[in-house]
Structure formats: structure tokens, C-alpha cells
Image 1 (cartoon, rainbow, N blue to C red):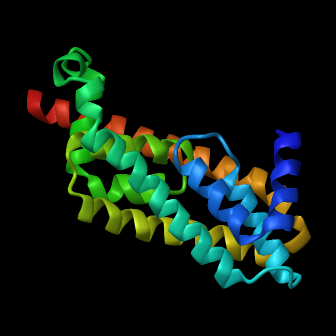
Image 2: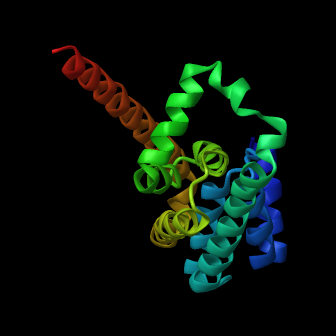
Length: 197
């Protein structure tokens, strides 16, 4: 991972906004690239005058939304050719997850923008579930704006300490995911218990 990060940072210094656009776009398509760490580093570079914070923000936001929209479109328009409803119907967990995404679109999209790979999976699920594109892209853009802005501002103000902060940010993302999962499990438990009474 250190070699990959060093390579990406060198591309960032050489190609600036184009590198941000390509790397963030690819990470939106479920490739395991450290885009949040890259945004932290970009913010640090902006604090030293190498780049513009606004330029970083718009390059990352636009590429994120385009990448997420492509992930959505792949399953929305072509997913059913490869994955039939009958096959998915065999797995109760998939059906429940799909129903949850359809029912709680706003919360699911907004929260998963901060979690990396789960966000890409939600893009596919939204497309497969038939979530309207206008709804998807609205909450995707809001969530990505908050996520992108957070990491750029953190990198800008933490400056040289942003590399250490990336570990903390990754840990915070995983903690958020665990909290959301616990909330979902408890909610299902109380719902079942209420139905039994």
C-alpha cells in the first residue's frame, strides 16, 4: 500500500487536477484506491500553494459523481441481463438489503459516501433496485460534496500531519460502518419483536 500511495502522490504532484479526477473516478468504480488519503494530501498541498483547494474540490466532486453514476447505470440498465431476480430471490439477505436501500435511499447514500468501498456497492444496489436516477444523483452529489470537502479541509489545516490523519480517518470510517450495522441489526430485532407481540 505504501508503494501505491507513493506512486499516486507522485502522479498528484505531476498531473494535479487530472490525477485527482482519474484516481477518484476509478475509486468510485470499486477499485481499492486510497482516494480519501489522496484528498488529504491534496488539501495539504493546497495549504502550501501547490494547488487550489477549490480546483481540488470540483475535480474530485465531478469525478466522484460521474464514477458513482456509471456504477449505478451498469446495474440499472445492464445488471438484470447478468443477474436475474430469480437468482437474487434465493438469497434472503440480498432481498432484504435491496429493500432497505429502496426504503432508506437518502440515509444509505449519504452515509456510505464516507465509507469508501461500501459506497460503490450501494451505487450498484441503487441501480439494481430501480431507485430513480434523479434521487440517486441528488443524494450522491450532496454526500460526495460533504465527504470531499471534509477531507480537503482536514488536509489543508493539518498540513504535514495529514498522513497520520489518514489512519484516523480510515478508522473513523470503519467505526461509522460498524455503528450503522449495529443500528440496522437492532432495528430489525425490535421490528421482529414488535411483530411477535
